[in-house]
Amino acid sequence: MKRLAVLISGNGSNLQAIIDACKTGALPAEIALVVSNHRAAYGLTRAERAGIPARCFPWKPYRDAGRSRAAYDADLADLVAAAAPDLVVLAGWMHVLGPAFLDRFPGRVLNLHPALPGTFPGTDAIARAFEAFSRGEITHTGVMVHWVVPEVDAGPVVATAQAPIYPTDALADLEARVHATEHRLLVEAIRTVL
Ligand code: GRF
Image 1 (cartoon, rainbow, N blue to C red):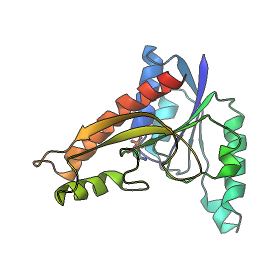
Image 2: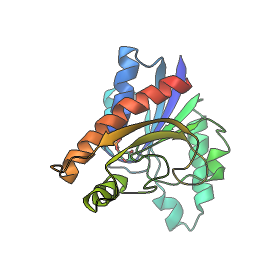
Image 3: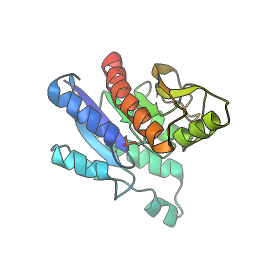
C-alpha cells in the first residue's frame, strides 16, 4: 500500500477527498501523516476523525526565534520523512517550500493549484480569475496538479482541468465549481503518479 503525507493549511476539503478515495479503494494508498502549519486548520479535525496521525507544525515559533525558513523547512522534512511517504501532497498548503524541504523528496512532491498552468500563480487565484473574467480577459479558468519545484506553482504538470465561468456567477459560485474540480482532479493525479 503506497503511503501519502498530506500537507494542509486550512479547511482540508481536498484532504477529505483523498481520505474518502482511500476509504473506498479508489486510491490504492493510505495517508500516513497529515501536517498543518496552522493550528486552527479544520483539516486537522478531518484527519483525527479518520484516525490519521495529524501534526501541527507552525512557522511562527521559528520566526519569533529569528530562525530561518530553511531551518523550518529542514525540520518539517524530518517530520514528514519519519512517516516514510512514497508521495508528499500539498493540498491547500500555503507556505512556499524551499530546497531544504524539496531536496529531501526529489520528484515526490505534488501540489494542487486552483488555476490553469501559467496563470494566476500564488494566492487568491480563484478571485483573480473571477476579476479577469469580469474584465472580459478570460472565458474560463481551471485547476492543475504539478510536481513541485522551487518556483511557486510552476513545476511539470501532472493533470489539469478547466472550470467554466458563467456571467451569472458570483465569486462563491466559481469557488464552489473550482473546488469540486480540485477534489476530482487531485485524486486522479495521485492515482496516475502512484
Ligand atoms: C484550495 O483551493 C487549494 O488549491 C488552495 O487553497 C484551497 C484550500 O482548500 N491552495 P482546502 O483546504 O483543501 O479545502
